[in-house]
Image (cartoon, rainbow, N blue to C red; front, side):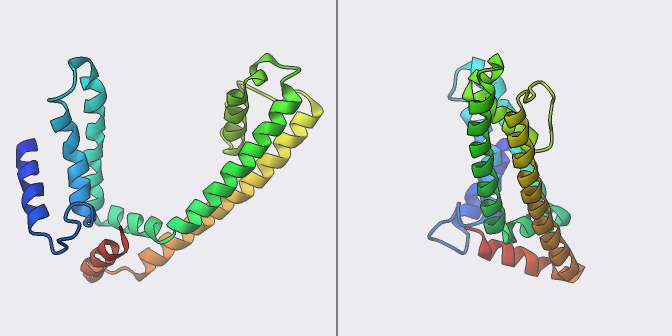
Length: 193
């Protein structure tokens, strides 16, 4: 099966319309290439690493994006808003990093697990993502205030992210009809890379 897929990728790579970038210029060909690479890498690495390489076979699920219309539409929805999502994610990372520094300074003298800055970052990201495992908590008043404020700000950023995603999916799904499938596929191909 992997050999047939490799031959198929080779033929499509040769006969693609865009001769400048035959593999990387076509999303669907690129996804197929990613899904076959773990098979061929398995021949060249030591056997103790094979379980790790086999785990990469999950990339074959990316073919669902190519062959299943709902996944393709959701992908197109995310592709439309990639710049907005990147901006919001950068703001979230920046605020969480500053909050981690503040938690580190306020909590490291009272709790041993906060003496490591990596643990402070873990605490801040888990708390700001509203996961909150409960394995670490701020005990000082200043630490609780910092955590509360940063969590509130990060909740607003997450609300923005959810709003942007919801608006894009609603727009794409609202403008899509079954006879427009070719148009959606062509527009995704043109806008990618």
